[in-house]
Image (tube, rainbow, N blue to C red):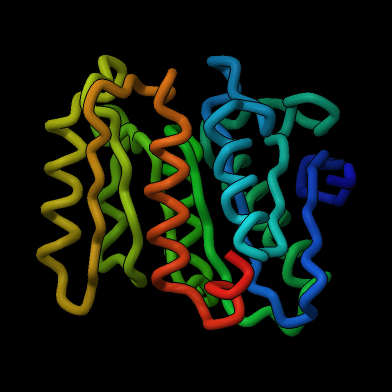
Length: 219
């Protein structure tokens, strides 16, 4: 799990990177929750997503937004964090020019940032959005959403109402050519306390089912 430093638009960005032995392994970018609410790349949900993708044989990168940990800069209300994510994707692709596919996974605020990057970069083949804050951030930019993916919500989430996430899912499902998975984990709160293993099983099963034969073999 080597630590890395790469350049972003606000200075250096700190990350942790897992390299697969397969030169054509797919890549995955993990985006952490809100920095002003304690979000870092070490967040338990973000780290769990990192472990799932790494375990499936992906070249996987998680990183700290500007102003978090050793990443330079300061919080920028989403715009700068989107630029940080784009810089992270650039680094990931530059080090894996033969990657078979590209995925993005984000938790809470990170899912909102990640979905914006999804709209700007055509290389993504799939997404995982965990506890997307559909009650407080505008997801109307997903019109249309370019790729299929999975949304996971805790059934006992008191931070983001399940009703707002369900409304978002229904809007996405109405778009042609998309298959949007929606898993509600009963009893799970916003951070999936005591339910991380179950969340990981849902993510792993979905990515495994949609991935290339080599990834399915690795998983």
